Length: 321
Image (cartoon, rainbow, N blue to C red):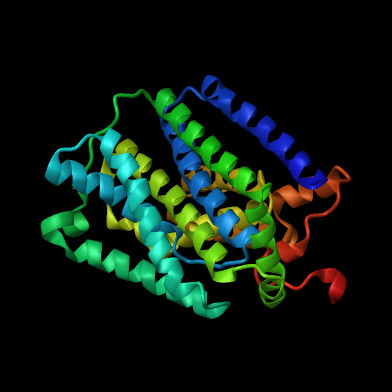
């Protein structure tokens, strides 16, 4: 609990800092980069709850973002419904789909769960890309922008990120948090103690799916386009890398990772088409040097107890090696 309290204080300080950023970053382009970073931060926080705390390695965060974006997009394009209807509908649809998928796949563990969620991501992307009559295929759907300025968009995304983080912290402090940690650490032992493993894994999977769907719905109203490119394996990999680089199984880590990765990728664009090679090399270096993530390294420098490596799905704690 002491670790969570310390991380909560650090997260609140981080949000206070993020609230001041639009006053320091005045260029519209970089304000847009910050908004996109907040979008990815919401996805990374949701994935961190599922994988970092729950131990369920899913490759489908981008799939639910895609579903959320297309739900509000289709409702506007075909039914002329406003975002005030489309965005809540996206949350409901992704929660229901996440719950149904969780009932099917969360009896699996390890690589089987990862492969199944990867297959789901590929299926969703292919269905949307080939359903031209409904989704306009690879052309994407034009989505109306909200009547907001860029700073207002920024604070809207920041508010949503705060809500996602608040739900995460609330779950971790409840019985659900104890259950999902027990399942992560030893699923068989948790089941022997009376924890309904599949039920709680499914519940958390559905909640994180709804978080991703909400982020995706907001993002398409910012970008003005719902595109199948939102739901590729590269997008899921980017979200996962943000959570891991920032610090898996920590509260502020995924937010730190999202901003570092997104801002770093944009800053490296000045090196031309080789920026992805440089970016990949930097990510490998960071992951190799800071195995507990950036936030874990910060805590170590400050003399705080080290984040347990067991928070990474499938990793054996160093103390037991």
